[in-house]
Image 1 (tube, rainbow, N blue to C red):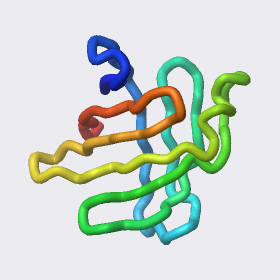
Image 2 (tube, rainbow, N blue to C red):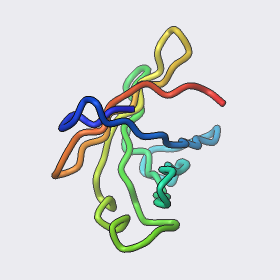
Image 3 (cartoon, one colour):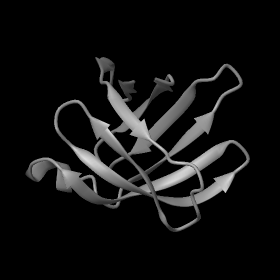
Length: 100
């Protein structure tokens, strides 16, 4: 996954989405491999697009708290990948994710 402010920069994340998610309820988490893990709230589903926001920090140090309240989308693609786009005040993280 790349960051839009530096296309050469990449990061690895793990997204966990359980079945049975309901709008405006907790629906999984996102963990980056530098120590932050956020709880996700499902905001809406439009076709193959899952809109979420980070509800709270599940683990990590002070910089992780800045992610709370930021939001993004996960788009299911026909090729089995999941396209993530997450916006923060400082940058947009964008890139494909693969099923593990």
